[in-house]
Length: 240
Ligand SMILES: [Zn+2]
Image (cartoon, rainbow, N blue to C red; front, side):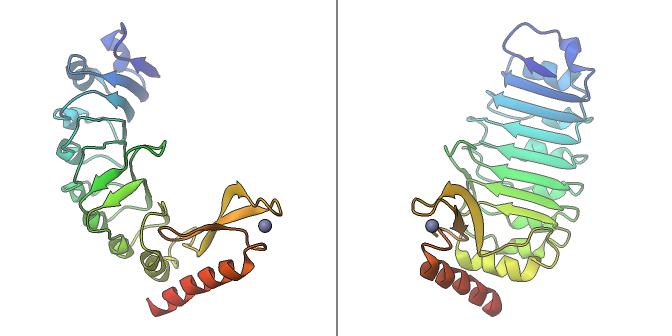
């Protein structure tokens, strides 16, 4: 159920549904959300608040999606929601840190990202703490920049089965993760992935080569370059 909190709504409507999508959350309506919402699956969209303080009182919520909050700079109240199994934090351009996320030991699925429409990225200091989430099996990272520019720590996520990271990191790091994690991943990390764009010459689907600043190539028309770059990746895996 979708509730637009900047229009007239009945607070009692927040109490019943197991899945709720609350939009346009302001300082005025936030106390009502905290008091009334009993959903298991909660999405908060367009969060106009300056602080998420109080969110930890949403004790029924096990699956939490938070999208589009331009003023929030502190995520720590979320990391007191120990019951969470699924967490999605997207489009928080001011949030600098996920420090404390390792307290969410029940987390199985995690999404971290910037604007999905290629707007502002999520800027984080590091994702080191993700290696301390013992039940993490699905991780999706998109439009994210890390101060330490390091994703290699993910090799320590022992239960990870599904990993998707957008192409914003050094090729070497993807090769390292491929070496360490491919044995446990349902879809392995590969040198090139089919893209949706097509080749201007032959009409076949192009490939996106793995790694920051890598090109999109046609495996036939750009054969030489395609083979060189995919071989480079396989050599990096061997040496990792
Ligand atoms: Zn072609």
